[in-house]
Every structure is written in structure tokens, then in C-alpha cells.
Length: 282
Image 1 (cartoon, one colour):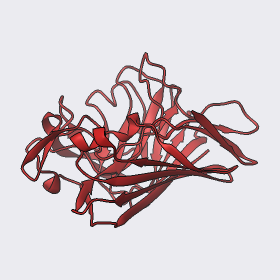
Image 2 (cartoon, one colour):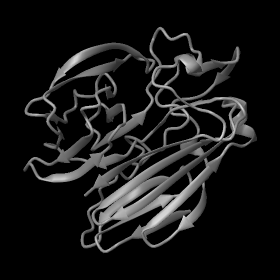
Image 3 (cartoon, rainbow, N blue to C red):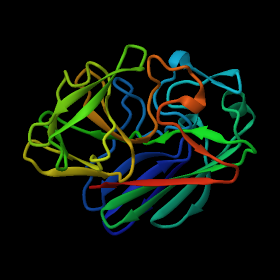
């Protein structure tokens, strides 16, 4: 089911399937900021990445000497969430483990995703609770896609140079290389994503603004304290770009595949909670 939240400035729509944001507009305009999942390019809008971000080596990991198979970005994006609160400008969804999830991710958990409108910003919050008796290992991340056109660019506030991880053909990290930004700008073109996503591990990057050719802001994504950022589109002139704050990252090429040793992994003790949030301003 698709739900709408609205205030005097903006309105958003979120599906219960995947708790996925699928529309974001100003109330006095019809322009759609969120990519509309044209399957010619990419058939999603803004999936939730949980309990992993990116791809695992051989799509598998080991926990307590047992091998588990888990596909790219995990299970949450393909699960039906329960609506637990629904007000005019706020909605909250919950996902719990089930029999099927335990076969590939052997932890009892609660995942809450909420969307709150604040003037012309949408605040997206994630809460993860460990309901297992043992320590729980997980990652979580966002994957919102925004409509773009020729001439659009990304502006990184006060960032002149940083480092970028490269992913191989299997989606695994295999090198880290310096990246210089022209006046803190990253121009979107068909060659930018020929080597898959641009992945950053730089706490200096805490907001990215999508701007048009006239240097006017369209979308500003703010994400304090997220250790990783992905920037991605299809390498075929697809008219969208994803700005993805992450707590987690794809496996390294030489990983031992033990989940407790995974790069960027988080953990929670029994009944402990993890909370984070980011915002989209239009």
C-alpha cells in the first residue's frame, strides 16, 4: 500500500513494501524529485539496505562456522513492513524477523523506518533493535534516487579532494584512490559510473547537493556521522543519480567472509538499539 504524508511545503509518498520512498514533491509544483523506477534503467526508487550494504563475497558470509547466503543489499527492500504510526506529516514502519529471514540472517531483530516532514525537508530515521540473545551484526544504508538531466552536478560542501573506493566486476572493494573535485563539484556524465558506484569513506562529507546547469539547488542530502557514502547511477546515461549515506560497505576482495570481521559492520548486544537519520531538502 502507498501512503502520503504532507505539510504546507512538501508532500511524500512511501510504500509499505520495503518502506520505500517513491515520491517527493513541493505542494505548489508538480515536479517529481524521486526517480520513478523506469525498468529500462532501474526499477526501484529508494530501497532500504539492511542487514548488509553492497555485495558479499560469493553472496555469502560465515557466522559461528555456518555459511549463510545473502544477496546484495540484504532483505529489507523486499519485505512488507507494518505501519505502526501514521499522522499528517509523519509515518513509521516496522519490520521484524520471520521464519524465512532467519534462514539467511540468523538474528531476531526489529527495524523501524520513519519519515517526518519539517518545512521543505524530509527526515528519514532508522532504528535497529537486537532481539537475539547473542550479539547481532548488521549494516544499514539509504539508496534514494533523484531525477537528473544533462548538465546536473553534485556539490560537496568544502571538499576539494577525498578518496574513492573502487568496486570490481563482482561488486567487491579492490582499491582506494585519490579523487580531486573541481571547486567541490562532481559533474554527472556517462563515464562517471563506468566502474560502478563511487564509494567514499570520509567523515568530512556530511552533505551533498544536486544542482542543475544554472547552479541552482534541486536537492540537498544531509547525513551527519554516516561513515560511508555511495554515489551511483547506471552507466548508460540513465536520468537519475543515487546519493546514498551508509553505515556499512561491500566486502573487500580479500575478506575472510566472517561477519564479525566484515569491513564497516556494526553490532548490538541483546536489546541494544542503534539509531541514525538523514534528510532530503528540496
